[in-house]
Amino acid sequence: MDISFAPIFNSVLFSVIGFAILLLAYFVIEKLTPESTWKEISQKNNVAVAIVFAAFIIGISMIISAAIHG
Image (cartoon, rainbow, N blue to C red; front, top):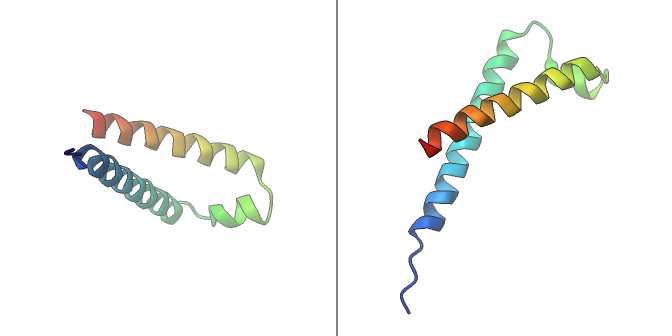
């Protein structure tokens, strides 16, 4: 029985690459904003900043997904 692991490997590889790009985009936005967004969300419970960053993460994830799938 010959099992090909290429699709599983490709899936894991693209997932890791996509996650790395998402983290890179987050750190770029974090550096561009004047305040620490993580501090605003976690310590000050700023719901507006949390909603904006949730939309940012969803938007960047959709772009990365479209780029990976072609």
